[in-house]
Length: 161
Image 1 (cartoon, rainbow, N blue to C red):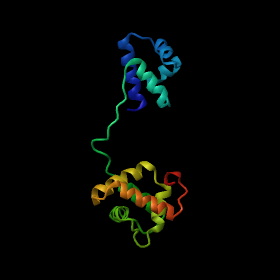
Image 2 (cartoon, helix red, strand yellow):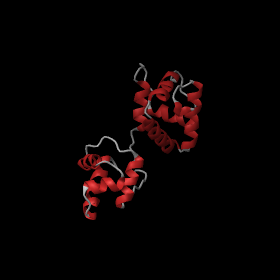
Image 3 (cartoon, rainbow, N blue to C red):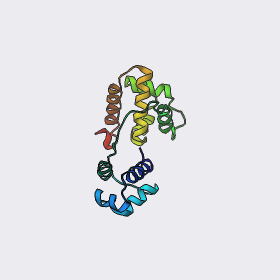
Image 4 (cartoon, rainbow, N blue to C red):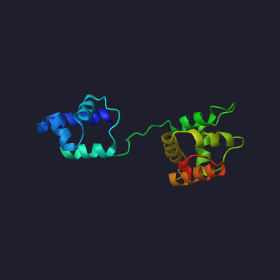
């Protein structure tokens, strides 16, 4: 659920409860402006704590579940990000196998270091998930390989500490 979807749900529930925007704002300890912007879909950020209080006040719940069809571009995106500065490309096959075995292909150390230092975490998560499915290696082992590489290359990212 994003803020626009939350705004629609809040407006529908508020109206069903017969509350004005001002009444809801007072009940949730928010400003009326926040409620107005949320319901319009133009609020930039609310924060999870405020959103949870608001939802609790009007009887909405937040449910989480894995995507039924997760994106399948993690290895492609990771391969591209790892290869952007290099003449020779790190293929998705090479990357998946390396992630699964922990063995970096010959002349691909710089690619892997770049990937570990620069790829968005969401791309890494997706790539690990795909590599695990393709190679039948548990994701936990793949994460261990990535962490080992990060320490070897002395990656400055806090995610690897």
